[in-house]
Image (tube, rainbow, N blue to C red; front, side):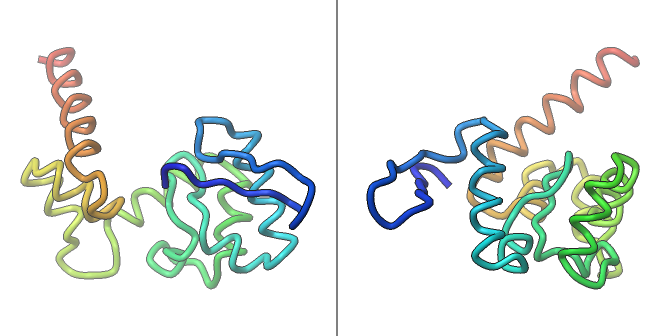
Length: 137
């Protein structure tokens, strides 16, 4: 995900670096991709606050990525419900839920976001967990 660039025209336009913490650029990339293939664009983006990839739409109960996109754009409530549905998953028992119950934040991060940065994200989740318990104990 680092060093990705895009440009809208095959000649003459400059390359733009994406994934640089700019929602304006991310929307520009999405809008370009949507003009090329709307379904592929929606399947390949992280949606809403929980940043759930569009291809995960069946795990959280949607018929397709378009339905998920519309629901997540419709309200934060739909995003929160989508997050909990994604954590619960479709398997019994849920591997993501079990990881959280076991306080295995790296395993949770791996299941939630893939293996690429599981240790980093697991550490961030653990930090928030620890801060919460410091504040509530």
